[in-house]
Length: 106
Image (cartoon, rainbow, N blue to C red; front, side, top):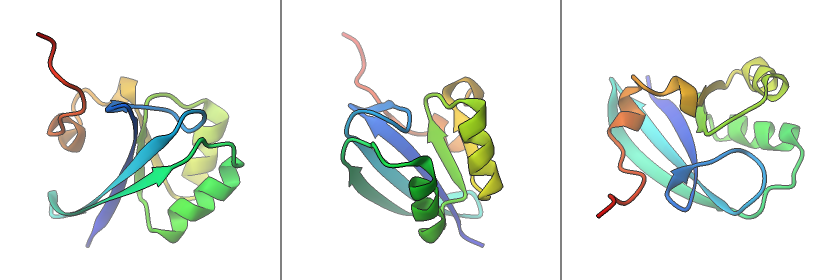
């Protein structure tokens, strides 16, 4: 079974739902292996959370990675069947730990 995970990034860093322009990076995984990647540019997000949730469900997203999310919004995502992973939860996450999101410091 294919699982679809989405990561919200802005300027090569994990970001939240609202505010600046961002990129939604979608990974298709099968048996814990990435079999496809898609990117979608999102303009400044001022849309209601419910509209975003319906869009994510329409494109079959199972898990979304964001920097932060309040509990009320997180509960809405869970209600729609989308697992939320925030930066504080990602220490042992296989997918995110294999990605290179920011340039090294020299």
